[in-house]
Length: 456
Image (tube, rainbow, N blue to C red; front, top):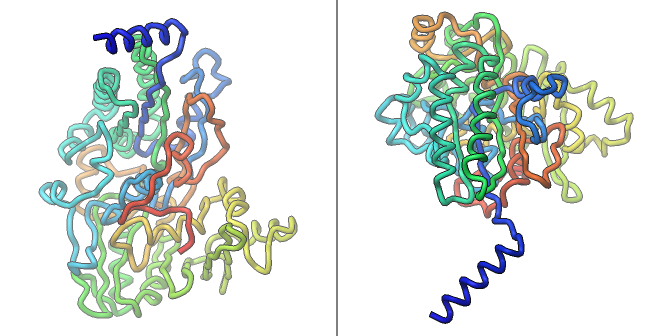
């Protein structure tokens, strides 16, 4: 009893001394919201109409390639322990089983995609997508309000909310539709603070990638199959010979993957890169990576010098990544060392380029899933890739799809990050695997997690 009284007296003295309780932290992830949408609603020129007073940012968050959730979230959250997805989408090729898996309602629950279970509040099944597609903003705001209420009432010091409805709104309406969602988020956060002033919290808000489009998108699925057939390859769902190419069309995105025998990677990449609407294709070599495009071909290498990451970009015919001008500027600035380019300078030089941070993102495209592609392709602007059935269903709903993501290009790539964490200084841009580190301690990477940022 005496001990209890002493403890209570200590607590009273501590409270009287004015010590504030430790702040809690709320993370809100909005799927597929482009940087520019966040920049528009936070623009200081709006005066009193600007949202998120007291927040810093937005920062450009340079996403992964493909710029899609199943790669982007493990890429962003891998440094704090999130394990990789088995594939780039719910339907993928499994190297161990030698066949295509996933893409159905039953397999959704049976095949583990670790990011789906990472959040305190997120969508747990495919049924949510169908419901949200009808009125994505209204249903998304409702889910967000419920999620923040759960956070306020919880005992957790750290709470993670994932909202998928913003992705659906971008696809079926347009990215600007999410501005209404931002207004609701601003109000909901203010209400949450007013409802619980004795339990202060700070907030981190970010998106996993951007969204690109505007005009009805042309599906390259059939031309891809036709080109492979003309090149002597057969499209199958199992990889049984060097003349077989496995494709995994599923959602309507602006990237796609091909799975081949080792000796077929080069010829298949050249065929695919020559299809109208395909911007570029890449594959891994024994040492380095090869990029094929209608603009030419090049070999990419990486190495570590003096504890820092460096790149070698060797065009063979043309300039597939459109990087020669940046290389010349780096050379003039004295940054190039015996043909090697410093990673940080490459990042800074390409944040606003058509294909931001292309070296790093192409390399990680083969590391961010446990079943990496043999060849991975980025589709050009105005085009998409996906199953004809999915395209048909989209037409029945909202008409021809006009907006999507997945590609290497800037609009599909650049997400956003903003926060009111006191000691955070918002940079102009941040790479995906460094975005969360100022707000969360890095963990020792577990087997299967993404060990981003290190040469391989």
